[in-house]
Length: 427
Picture 1 (tube, rainbow, N blue to C red):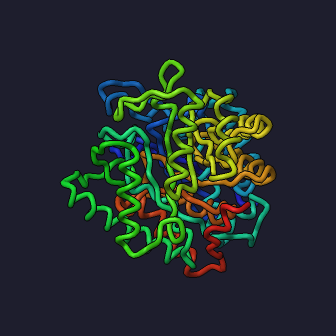
Picture 2: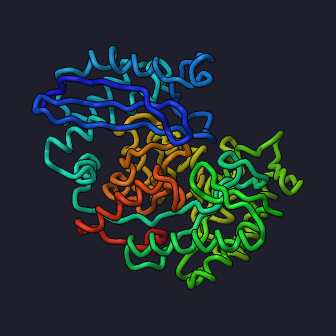
């Protein structure tokens, strides 16, 4: 047993300049583990609730001093003296202390900061890499794999100030032999895309996740620009590099219709699925995330039947990393993949449970960042530890995104984890 002797939190800034939490967990051995909490822009209605102060005189109401206080008092008092390696017990104590399904009493951001910092402290105390310790918690030690990076190189929707409705246009370099080569491929396509946009006199300013955010004639124009960039960079679309979309469709769902304001078009649920089906037939799209509104479960079932055999359908807002909701979705035939965001559910234990349920059901898993990120690289280790196979952590610029990629480069350099590329999508 290694006893927790201190827990402390502080208010820091995320990549958008908004406050978030960092927590430290100190052990009797002198080891300290730290973790920072991300924050999303487009959020599912059933996500665990982060606690904000609401004081308009501080950070426009976005301060997190109340959550910091909850860590430094209530959570600290309950966890001092406990064994840091009892991750499930620590998380259960915090969940019971909060007492709500959505963690609104203590704040999911407060709980998560301590949950992740505890794992970091335990790994350090055991002289293990974080991914090694997380694999033990997952019950899969030694089953490591390097994830396929899903690189968001063109931003729209809530992640950019432009007229593009679909939130993310991603590249998936599945043809690479290693993660290192996949990252190089992505970087080369990203830089080539800048040249392609510049030649069209389009903006090369970047959005929250580091992708370019130009105004375009249509959502399809974004796909065409990326395909051109893949080819110009010397790669083959549909072989070396595939495309991925995050529609974030809940963000443009209005009165039962999917409204693409940038194109002045409106679709019913089935019509929007048909729209996506047409894009899949003409572009090498391998993955579509949140292709419908989170509450449109009948539409999701239709979309899964129509597109599920053609590409990966990832549930983000529809599942919110919640094991119970995921189980319901699996039974209803919704999607065939889940996006994993640790702050959507609020504890490491619940996150690992969601991954396990997805794995047992044959769903693929995608470990994901949030649009408001920090230098914390826990999700990189989580992707390797659970052999998730895929990671979403933004574009090839902005240090908050690149930090995760660099962590993965280091892991590949000194571990036995293999990069499986296209095999990750054939489960």
